[in-house]
Length: 63
Image (cartoon, rainbow, N blue to C red):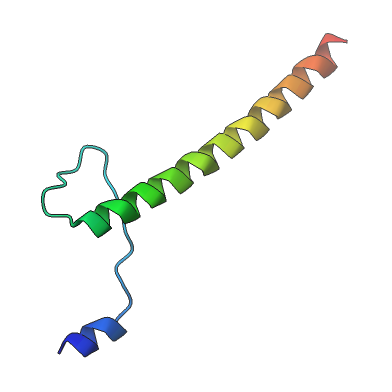
């Protein structure tokens, strides 16, 4: 029975801010930390691009 479970695709990890962590294993928590860290990096990259675009537009219209 356990071998059949290993063949199934894993459920996509989702995390809700403030979610109860009591039932999660240490491995589950590590996966969520990695997922959230990657998301933070993605957000920082996008924020930097948007700020650069805004700064370029501001510089263009000031001249």
